[in-house]
Length: 206
Length: 283
Image: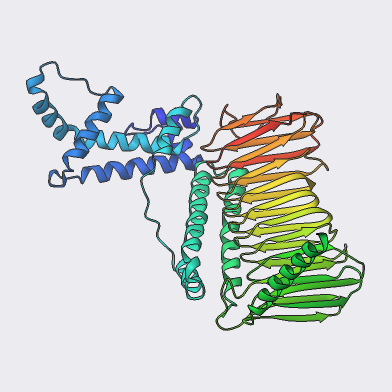
């Protein structure tokens, strides 16, 4: 059994000995199953009291229509009520399925034939608030104390270096055996090392 | 009418020179006798450093100090010369400027550092180690040694450089024209990488970026084995390459692999989201 075959039976409750053998030998599928299990368990914890805003519902409805999972109701007067009832009843499993689809796509971004769809998903990036590690903060403080005008530039460079590391790590996770992705991760860390080196070089100034 | 014109020009030059030095500029000329393969290190936080090949067994340093808030520290130990622009209290990006023009023996190993100024190394055959921050870095007509360049946001230009070459840049663009060697590594974050040359010397050419575009231009007769991939950027080749087995999925538009000629050199072009283009040189 290979990974593609396993993905087809992923949602089955019980797994055959062949499937379990594949899980034992394939860390990627094992991680995928672990993610599914986690999502399923978290989905059950969703409560009606935690219902998201109307904007979220509208976006979800629009997305489901574009995916062809729901169709416009024929009797327009009852359409809104129908969807309201429908979404409250099916929200949890649908949200879980959408999350699972996202996880599958992210775990296997290079499947043949679906490059366009994957590219679309990757391009849509939510704004990320970049946290600064204690080491990075120490570096920024050092730079700040000696060269206030350069702090923003160092911060930007630091963010770029960290973004490269994050992306390279994600790429390695998607294919741990790819030596070129591993090299890219090493390059990313070398950039950060250079940033530290050059920043420390400057602190010899008065 | 020629004599008055010349006189006027001379007066103007003298006046400008006088004003410049009156504003606090001073000039230092240093001469050092050295042996074979000397090592010369110049650390200049603000201002340009220009190093060129000169007479054998001699290092000549000309430095223009822009104020009295910076001084030159020099030391010579055996065959090693260290020169540092020592910033004094109150020095800043303007008053701390020192302009260096240095002549070294062709076989010298040089280590150059400037944050804001241009760094230029020319016609050297020893090792050239350069570190910059914002200023442009040019290395030209160098061969035989290692050329290592590190910069944050300054552009890097290598012209007619041959040897063991490593360039690392965060945001600075890297331009290479007629560059070859047994190893040519370029590691960039957002800076572009542009190469124009023949990928000679049976070398290994590894160009990597995070978001910067990579463009490599080679002649039709190039002898290379190419691997190219961008996770999120477009990947194109003008060449009809002989297909080659790759350890990854070489899907059209995002990766390609193949050989050209006898595949004497290895060319690897990898980016995370930058575009990659292997172009054919138009003669």
